[in-house]
Length: 510
Image (cartoon, rainbow, N blue to C red):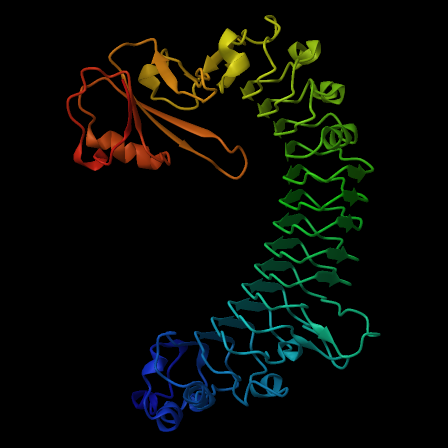
């Protein structure tokens, strides 16, 4: 690092990595002479965790790398010291580096106490990632509190108990006057989150916080996106008036019992997945809701959601609602707007209502694994096969140019558009699912099928077809493009060879 000593006219960004290799820690770090490099705007300091330095040596290196006060962006990665240097602690950061706008700390696994970032007057972005021992951020009652902060990302901080600790319990939670985006991921011990006043907050994401039981938003009039995933102990969610909220996504909150939306007139997408204890969804009106996706909730949640929704829905997906016996009548009011209806694995669904044929805008209907649904009105959609009652069948129906219902496969090359495929899984004598097919109308056809799952539909099927006896390699390249997990070879008695790229024991059905 001594080579940097005389380079005081360096401009822009400076990235120093391999700091674990510094031997004479005091001399070399000070010889870098970063404090005289006034034109450097961004500084990134990196240690590899496999370095042999002691924590005291690491601390000495960072102590000697104090940058010039003009610095705007500071990134510290893999720092193995227990304490941050004196120029960052005891309130010194706001005086030593008053022009900072961005701070990123990642992999500082031994540090327990953070610098006082809240006093930095121009800080706009703060990212804290993989800080294993930090329990809170300091928050005294004096002076401004993040006066310019717009983005706050907190990730992989398993010991974090509070987002910030107040000086006295009687002090009110701090306000964040400029905060726009707040993302909190993998904070296992965070028990509560309270945002007292965030007038500019537009996006909030809270994901994988195992102990989070309470979430309070007092005033966030600009909130447009709210996502809460994998917070199993969260029991209730009370949202203030959110006139701009457009997307609400709640997943895997096992203890959530109630959801209250005071006023969300612009909400266009509502997704609730795997909240089995949720019994109450209260909202005054959802006049702009276009997308509704529910999985593993109660039938009452579906009815309540539809009840407060105006005639605006375009897409409805229902999955694993075990007490659903028939589609609720409230869905009928969306006859003129509903374009896509998906029903997945509703084991007690026995009938489709007569008015389903009045859904004039419906262009796609998918029904998957509803074993008690044995028939469907012929005037509505094509009759379901008789094997439906004991089979796992994925049916996709769409309207053609003449407005007629056609059953189709999720994807196939255009040259085989007249060769529909039906995937069936009947039970054998022992009650096990056995794969039969797919059976194609075109003989001597090789079919590769990859089954995967995504966060929303949980089922996806990609079909790739070829008429030759040997699969060309370019089809395997195409299979990667459609996220094929692994192919199956079906009904190809004359198949003699497989390409090199495929020789990993595909499933073969004779």
